[in-house]
Image 1 (tube, rainbow, N blue to C red):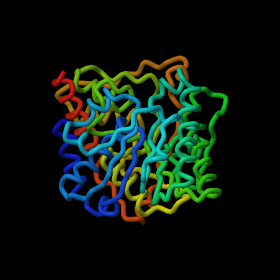
Image 2 (image 1 turned 60 degrees about the horizontal axis):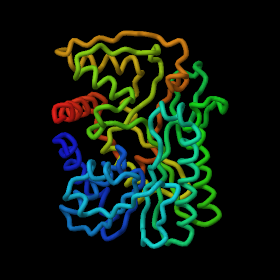
Image 3 (image 1 turned 90 degrees about the vertical axis):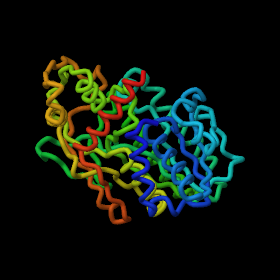
Image 4 (image 1 turned 45 degrees about the horizontal axis):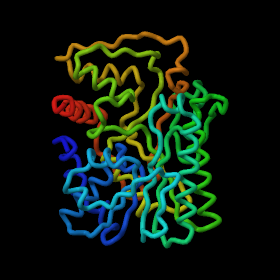
Amino acid sequence: MNDILENDINELVQEVQYFAPFEKTSVLVTGATGLIGSVFIKSLCKYNDEHNSNIRIYACCRSSEKFNSVFSDKERALISPLFDDIRNISIKEIELDYIVHGASFTDSKSFVEKPVDTIDIAISGTKNLLKQCRNKQLKGFVYLSSLEVYGSFPDSEGIKSISENDSGYIDTMSVRSSYSESKRMVETLCAAYHSQYDVPVKIARLCQTFGAGVRYNDNRVFAQFARSVIEKKNIVLRTKGETVRNYCYTTDAVSGILTVLAEGNSGEAYNIANEETTISISDMAKLVCKLYPESNVKVQFDLAEDVSKLGYNPVVKIQLDSRKLQKLGWTPKISIEEMFKRLIESMRILKESK
């Protein structure tokens, strides 16, 4: 674990109120080697180590090799791994109190190149878990959804503040919609299992989340900007960068998920976003350049003729409203400037360690 991520986790576990409800319980995390899943598990491990809290941790992922590379020897000693595809995983013989379900494709390129797989992993994988939860006495199940379920809204509305009850337009005939539409369908599937079988499912709608722990070759826009600074190369935008949204730091997202898991109402959705981070893509690129003037990086535009082939969504201008979650006791702490400083320093460490 690099120093930035380690400091993040040390900082998070001092917020005891987020972890205390899970002492002496068992927690399963799917998508365990992904960014959010891994930071979530690392935080539970650290809290276990510091408080002797006896949280039993189960981690579902497909690759034992990746599991071994993501988690340290000390962490692996505290984790029971389940190596299988989420569509086939069996949890019938495991006594569980909580589940955090995050297994999913997360990069836009996969949504376009593997749309059938994107949909199948989301729907079939979640159904496989929910079916097995019908006879379990779970205390909570959180599905990690996305701001993309909200779709797009008319430009005339400007930057739209989005509550959990809002819904915009998604083009069902766009291959890129494989992600957003499958997320929507899974949310409905979760609501159905809660209504018909009383499975205590809650939805966490995450905005785009990043921070220490992002891999150096990650292709999402924030990682591209970070690499440009590290490698002292100009940031090249293939669109005008008009999309506006807000973001969340990884450890803020983890504390938000813990809050939904412990305090949220079953059958309801909660936005997890830092409202103070609202910014357009182009302004975010300029901000990164401003934060690191010594890199002498500038923003350039090389507009693509067909951005849909690049896996980009239509332009949206939205700000997720997280007041519902904040009423449960959650507070995001990391600003957009600090998010990028920690991301860039973390990625720099990863680059130098290769």
